[in-house]
Image 1 (tube, rainbow, N blue to C red):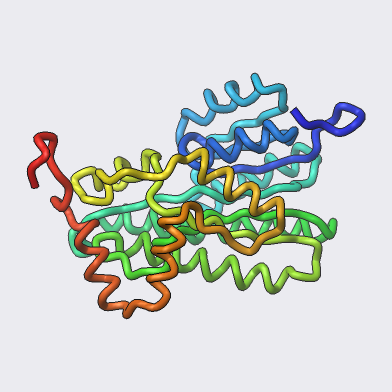
Image 2: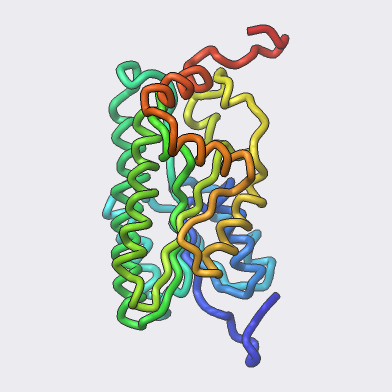
Amino acid sequence: MERTHDGQAKGLAVVTGASSGIGLELAQIAASKGYDLIIAADEPEIDDIGMHLSDLGTAVEAIETDLATMKGVDRLVEAVVADGRSVDLLLANAGRGLGKGFLDQDFTQVRRVIDTNILGTTYLVQQIARQMRSRGVGRILLTGSIAGFMPGSYQAVYNGTKAFINSFSFALREELKDTGITVTCLMPGATETRFFERADMLDTEVGQAEKDDASDVARAGFDAMMNGDGDVVSGWKNKFQAAVANVTPAGMLASQHAKMAAPGTGKDKSGSQ
């Protein structure tokens, strides 16, 4: 593990959505690089993850809190303040998805996707980035998505929130370019996590397709953040898809997305449609 010459941690990293998937992988990378951690998620599993990460020899504080609410984000920020330390790395990864047609979705779940992906993320970034600005140093990684490049038929709200995050990250990066703070947007494609299970999309083509490895995606994002890059699309297939999306009419993209995300587009266990 990398530590400073006097054996102290290199700094403090805050990672949200760290109970599984890309967030967990990001937390493990930060720990392996010698950063102490404050990790957060809205699931009780975060406590077990905290104990696991502490075995890597780093100090870890795990916080179960609702990151879809300002109150829940305040709880995380208060933990940072109570720790008496400044945040060196903010990895704002918490996010939610939701499948099926918009009119068939429970609006309580719709609201939770919006509040987690947009409200909670932007509020947390503002609170931590203000602290970073006062010090003149810091690195921020936002988990966007290549989904933000296309109208997401049968994932309309999710793709819309990721379009927001992608755009927000570039705007914030420009605003902070002379402050010593870097902003990086990680834009993965479909990744092997619990995302599609939680979004009730296991019966879709995209839900059943081969996906990218979460550890590879996290590594690409972490490295880009440390290099100060503005964005990174992980995987050559996703780079190609993003490039095509930028020159394809929105109506055509929406139709293509429907073919892979509409309920029932996947194969059943016997292999038939």
